[in-house]
Length: 225
Image 1 (spheres, rainbow, N blue to C red):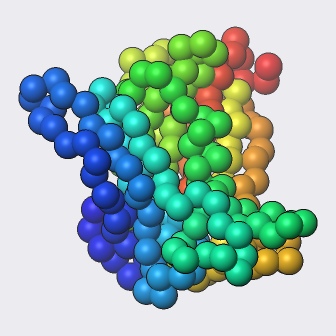
Image 2 (cartoon, rainbow, N blue to C red):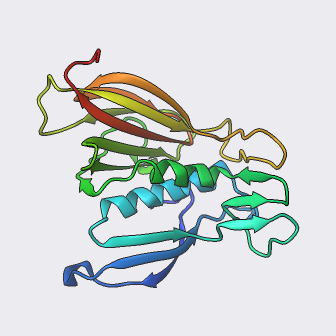
């Protein structure tokens, strides 16, 4: 992953490491992205982690497990930063990083599909993955944009008839700045928002600046179903 002003590399501690050529499996343990100020859960770190997770999905035949750490932190007793979820005896606060994990966990698949990035702007700041959920039949496309500008993307579902249509759930995570954080006692400023829309098998969309987009595509008989 290239380092840019808006996209920092994911810091990984590898507990298991082996060669794909030998059909061995890999476990990525205790990963997290650290910002310039390491104690902050910024949108920037959430975007970096999302970009790394698309790599996990693209290599799902080898990367079998991955775990974020630390997961939970009680305010006033937090020796390590950043953490995913913060709490006191009465309240809980979800970081931007938590919402990235939620988006990926709720939209996982069991078959990785080939995903080729075709986008305007600077594709070096764009990461993507595609999977299929065999239980539902849904196709799931994830796109991550670490640039400060919106990136137009052409989505083409190869191998499908041009007349095939889908009902899509589009979930978007972004914020006003890559430095945005969800602060204690305040409504979250970085939180995913979902909309439903019909799409064909080839369509254009935009990935917002410093944003994550998840498209969950359910086949339908027509765009209006």
